[in-house]
Image 1: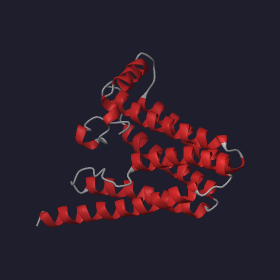
Image 2 (image 1 turned 90 degrees about the vertical axis):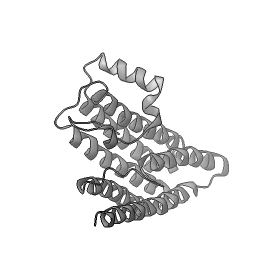
Image 3 (image 1 turned 120 degrees about the vertical axis):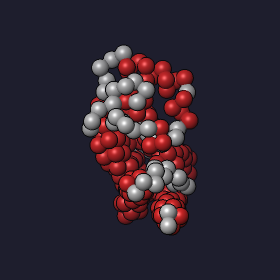
Image 4 (image 1 turned 30 degrees about the vertical axis):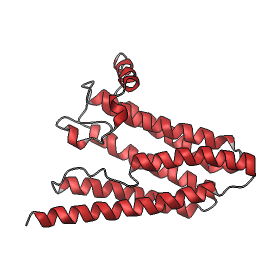
Length: 215
């Protein structure tokens, strides 16, 4: 997941296969040899996301910016991975960790999706996708507040949304350079919108079933 505070257990973290890889462990250990803090890593993720959103927004006029945007999406995700590893595995969690875990994530999702919306020529799609992305996080947090645990289920949770933008950025670059057309961003956003809406509905339905089961 991301930055953490004392008392946060494994069930509260997004399950990520990359967390157990040697390369991720090596990067986390390298950061722990510095004065890097989880909150600082989280804040750095905002800068990468802002750069990615701007790159996508201006990419129709400069195709290589699609590749830069895709790269910066992955750098944002890397920060999201490492802040949690430094906090939890490295024991550097802080009382404000929960704030730095959640608030930057919401900003990062929004600026990247909105930037991709401008790339598609229909900014409205990006804004709606950003709203739905925030709603998925709200439903997850609301379910946890009801004692139902963190629901990270998809089909279009944060990792899937960011994968769609990364792949979409690369394919949009190829489409623009080879075919001199630009339909991919609109298609990607349509898929993200449909998947994120379905994710919201599924999370709500699971919460309803869990609450009914308490009776």
